[in-house]
Image (tube, rainbow, N blue to C red; front, top):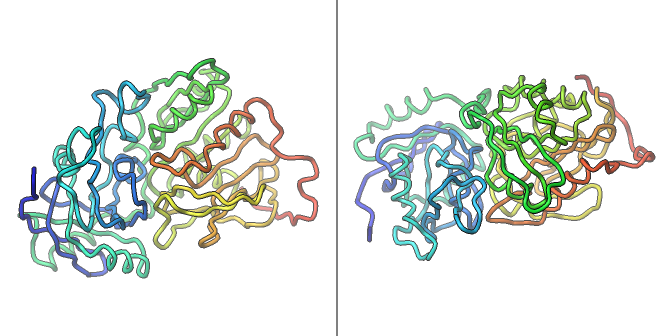
Amino acid sequence: MSALPETPAVLVLEDGPIYRGSGFGATGFAFGEAVFTTGMTGYQETLTDPSYRRQVVVATAPQIGNTGWVAGPGPSIGNGPENPSDNESDAIWVAGFVVRDVSVRPSNWRSTTSLPQEMERQGVVGLCGVDTRALTRHLRTAGAMRCGIFSGDAVGEPVDMLDAVRASPPMAGADLTGDVSTPSIYTVPAQGAQRFSVAALDLGIKANTPRLLAANGVRTHVVPASTTVEEIESLGVDGVFLSNGPGDPAAADRIVELTRAILDRRIPLFGICFGNQILGRALGFGTFKLKFGHRGINQPVRDHGTGRVLVTAHNHGFAVAAPLDEVVDTPYGRARVAFSCLNDGVVEGLECLDRPAFSVQFHPEAAAGPHDAGYLFGRFVDLMAGADPESADSTDETTTRKVSA
């Protein structure tokens, strides 16, 4: 493929603006929540991240597709050097993809095909030739919103396309974990000597998470989102991991109850992204939808325990409502905010002081990077080894507040 065919395509936003360009990938239409990501690299990892289920992703990097599509011949999860893949799952999960300039001829010895060809194969609609700077500025001002991509014969009258967008479901209130979770358990063995075993609740897990657990000597049983605490206990694991995933945490009541059962049993727990929001709800905190969310690989986060600033990867449109500088009494003992975003003060992590549990809103498992937060997997191992997460005088000079369950 030396050039894209001229396929008329448009992006229609819920509040009325229409952005015209050319279609690539599959031809047709797609609906979802319009969001933007600021990552300069890692588009394949973004597209295959289950957390982007039912979202139309706008890339702020001006040219996308230079490295093509890198997929090994087998499943992505557990791949080693002999079977390379840049996929975070076995499918593209985004509803649609919007870019300024798409590269149809990749320059990468590892690529197995081009981005447009892979999107066409998987039936994913794309739009290029759009002023993504103007589009991103609009989404930052007006907020993430419903949208539709229409290409080829699907392009219709503006009023009809807008009506179709407004009839599509919103992200608020959406329970999407069942769409992306594994239907059955599978296991990723530890690399080298096994130190611990973990049950990873698949709420939309990324392939790099079991890999990094394996690198820390952890055998990971990836289990469906419908798994019960009794089934987890029957595995004889040393800890539980709550993965990232799509949707509104306020709609995930069953997973919140499962997390409370884990806290009741004092099983060591580590959560990432959606898992952070689930732990927050289990502790009695609320969650809320951000105006346009955090998506990219260059977000600064402060570790409240050390004062260190981490550059981190983010992909979340919801956040936990908790006080930043207070230790709070919860139904499971004391808890506090452990990380916060330096851009806007959003809660980026929680830590239980009387239970072996902590979580982060960002992605320490990030592939294409950065890797500043990779040490958190070691912290989880330490937690399972019985390390005390907090000293007895942790509340000195700190205000304590009570929250209800």
